[in-house]
Amino acid sequence: MEGFTILHSSPLQISNSDQRAQKLEISMEVWVENLFSLHLNDAFFYVWTYDNKVSREIQEVKIYSSKLENLSSGKWKHIKIELNCKGRYLELGPHMVGAGHFRYRNLSLTLKK
Image (cartoon, rainbow, N blue to C red; front, side, top):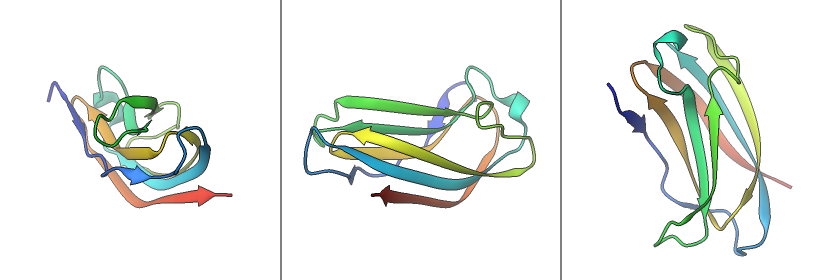
């Protein structure tokens, strides 16, 4: 497909304050069928934050790259991502541009102290 596919979560409230940053950890296992079939970009996961659940004016966007995370075709890879997120709400989810096939398992989001 020429467009993009993103399956994002519902808004998750991560803070009661607009100014406070939260430390979070995302852990998951990712499998890509053929890393070279991806085109336009090799993003596999997005995280974005905002302060207002109605307007959803994005404060931060973090994009995670298949190549930077050293994903290999046909192999599962365990990934841990530490985030410092500003904003009251967070959305996250798998992302793919173009042709390809990803699998995700054991996805968790943990608040770090």
